[in-house]
Structures are given as structure tokens and as C-alpha cells.
Image (cartoon, rainbow, N blue to C red; front, side, top):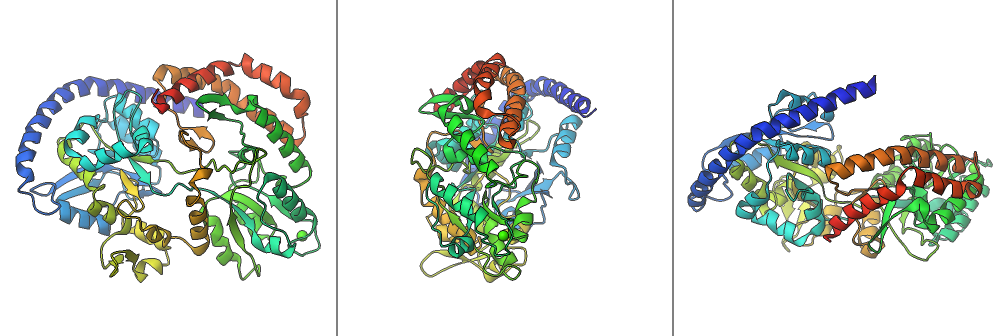
Length: 544
Ligand code: CA
């Protein structure tokens, strides 16, 4: 049933796509003419506009955007300020009670009535909308009217890669980040102290530490109840621990060459070790089923030892400090793998931002508005808010958040978001002008700050020339043909790999005995062609 429903929606979308193409051809011609007149008009106007004004008269554009279940709200303090300074107001088209971004998006597409600005959680869907004629290519508009976006495209290849669709068009302006770190290794520092152990720096030392966690009762209740290694994403990403041996169940490029890691030497080492660790009780026996609450459950019961997770993991020190005296999660460097390399695979990449729909009457004004978000003034507004309300400028020129922000019950970040700051738009999240990273760190708890500082200070842990790597999957861009073929092959390969990996981990099948047959079966299912397609997409990413 569900599949049928999805198919019906897809069909509708495809039909809509055709409609957009039909309309957009005409629209494009009209738009070209419009654009020309507006360009001329705006150029002569530009000199007369005061301050940060983008339009001489107040203008309102409609916007489709919903971030973290927060539909765009024009009442937000910072957007009111932006409207005052630029003369551009936005009007959200998603009702404030809506919590289903996907449904709202599909509804807008099937209505055929597009908002002037469209942002969405999924970049591939936005690019598809662009190719179908629902979003306009921004390349020329940027060149002519958006010098700050152009500068970001010129100097940041990852930003450019995220922005550029395979057809060469830019359909949306991404959200960029100044920090590289996303997740961190967290270990119970109080358990290490209790057992007189040092922070593990290699995967072998990690084995020793986890074994001690398992056998020496660090929680002190005389029960062998500790779960040394766990992960709340284990159910969707069972291979996260394979990273410790520099491998995974996914594709991964090395020295310009695309590999499917299960076919490589590291995979044999990784799975052999992981099976052993699981058998010895070092890994959560319920890693594949415990689910998203794992972290809460295992920390609250004082039995979880180590995990790889977001900075919020540091918050448990405060949350559980009274209940579990001495509870102390610390962030540590990734343990070096069997080849003595320290590698962190999980990282932040430019994410989705916003684009301009083909039904927008005045794209020139909007691209200037988009550009404003990358100016020092716009960037400051979207990151730090309003002077003397959310931040102050100190005598040495640095900025600090006000106590209203830092002491907010919503958390500092939550408070800023409640004013519309740090929303999911095309912008640079962090300190775009100057290098006052301390200001960004000020939004974090001390534990999260330590983690972020440690990982951001060690950029050598992050491999270069890597495409985006979201939860293990490479964020490569494919042609429609390649994508269809690739998806078809992987719909055969993916479930088979997951099934076999689970069997090996849980001891239901013997890895060493199965391996040759496993590789043969991967080839039967077309893995070599899938590698070829990914190689091509990776070459495109590298600009070959
Ligand atoms: Ca115990």
C-alpha cells in the first residue's frame, strides 16, 4: 500500500515536472525580458538607495521554508529588523501548525502555485525542481548582482560543489559552515580514572580499555552490567565502528580511485575485529535494535561507556551529575587505526539553503536580498542577531552574546533560533568576517566547546578531496540515467550487504567462511558497474 502511495506521488511530481517545463519555457522568455529591464532600472537605482536598502519601496515575497519544524515566521525579531533595513519582507506560505515538511512540499508542487523563495531539507529534490523548471538557474543573476555569493563560490570549492547541479546550474544557495566537526568520540572519563586507565589513542589501546570497562566494574555495583561501546544510530548505520579500522559497508574514494569498501583489505580486518568485540561483550548486544534512545537509556542507567555522537553528548554531565556522582563524559581524539592514522570521517558539509522559483516576478531583487545574507551586516544579523539585544561589541572590537542569550532557558542556540537567527537559508553559519571563533563556541556547553575545539584544531584528521559523506553515504551528483541505474543496482546490493553484515556481527554466520562467496554475489548483483558510476560521479566532483 505504502509503495503504491509513494508511486502515485512520484507520478504526480513527474507530471508536474513536465508542466513546469511547459510553463517555464514561456516564463523564461518573459523573465529574460523582465530581467533585462530590471537590471537597467536597478543599476540606475542602486546609487540612490540608502544604507542597506535593496528596494526603494517596501516589497514582500512569499517563502516556502520549514526548518526543525519551524515554518518561516515573519514575526521573528531578526526578520523584522532585516525587513526594516532592506525593505524586503517575507511572507511564509506554510501554516505555523504544519509539522510535515515533506507533505507541505509535495502539496505546494501539486498545487502548481510556487512561492517566490523555496527552501527544502533535501538538495537533490531542489535540484530536480530546478531541472523541471520550478526553480530558476541563478548563475547569471549571481554574476551580475551578488558579489558576496560569487566570492564565496570562488574561494570555497565545497560550497561551489554543493551549489552546482550536474547540469552546471545553480538552483539554490547553500548554507555554509565555519566548523568542520560534527560528531566526536566520547568516553567516560570517570571510568578511566576509576580503573586507572589512560585515554586510548589507538584501536588496540581502545580494545584494552573497553575490555576493562567490561570486566572491572567501573560503575561499582558489583554487577557485570557495563556496555562498553554503544551508538544510538546503530540501527540505521551499523558500520560506524568499522571506521576504527578505516573501512565501512559503503563506497569510499582513495587516492582518486572509488572503492566499495567491503571488497577491500581493511574490511576483512575490521569485520574480523568487530565480530570478536561483539562476541566478547564490548559492543552493545542490542546495537541493531535499541534505537535512538540508546544514549539516554544507557547513560541514565550508568552502564554506557563510550560512543560516537554529537556535541549534545557532553550535556549529560550536567543532566546526570546529581543522579550519578562524578559522571564525566570527555571528548577524545579518534583512536589511530591499524595503519597508525587518525581519521575522522564524519564532518559538516555545506547544506541546503534557498532558491528562487520560476513564478517569482522579480528575481533580481531577490538575488540581491540573498546576497545581503553574505555581507558583513547580513551575516552578523543571521548569526548573532541585533546589537545591544543579543550581542554587544567589546572595546577591542570582538563581539559577545548578551546574558539574555547566554542564560536563556531555551539554551543559547534555542533562544537565537526563536528569533529567526541561524535559520536554514543560504548563508554562512559561524564567523564569516574576522576569526572570533570564541563567539561561536560561546553558544556551546563547556563540554561541547572542548570537543569542538579539539576536533576543529586538528583539521588533519579530516581527509581532503572527500565528497560530502552523510551518515556513511557519499553525497555525489549523478545524471538522471546514471542515477536510475545506480539505484537499481544498489537496491540489490544494499540489503544483501546489510543482511550479511548483521549475520556476521550476531554470529549467525561465519565471516571467514562466507567472504569469497559474498564477493562473488556482490559481482553478480552488479557492484562493479556501481563502482564505475560512482567513479564517474567522483571524477566530476574532482573537476576532472
Ligand atoms: Ca557494574
